Length: 196
Image (cartoon, rainbow, N blue to C red; front, side, top):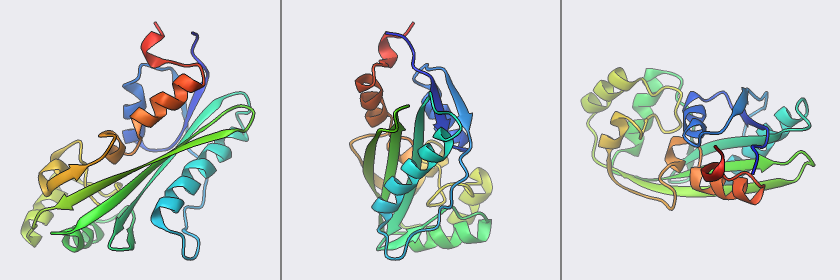
């Protein structure tokens, strides 16, 4: 099998690092997409829509490539949690999530050159332990998770904030569901384990 031309439609350094794990050659192109939720749009639907919107936005300028779009949303009791952008908002998010179960919807879309989209959405359920305001502030100062939905980095010190995590794909919580992506790539004729 030969590699297929791949583009990661993302500005996320976390997703780029994840995709690098597969040993594939790919380009990174930041998509220009309005990420505003539609009225009444559930968080899982928002993640799927944005993953495909990002892939299609990039594919307009790269019509012969396979494009990977991805998005993640966090749902805390029906409230959509986005990227905090500031330490104050991260503090408020983590205080709100303390002792609660939060659903993370990690969606991806593999868009073929012919425009056919294959989509995957992995839901990861996390239970945050009781967190004091001082502990949250210390965590934010150490890890600066201001560009992460839910205000933590599970691949770093953020793992210490949880009682448990449940998911069919442990990579999904970082932002890119690699198990689902590998399946879609194999179906497209690109098996990462057989490429030299």
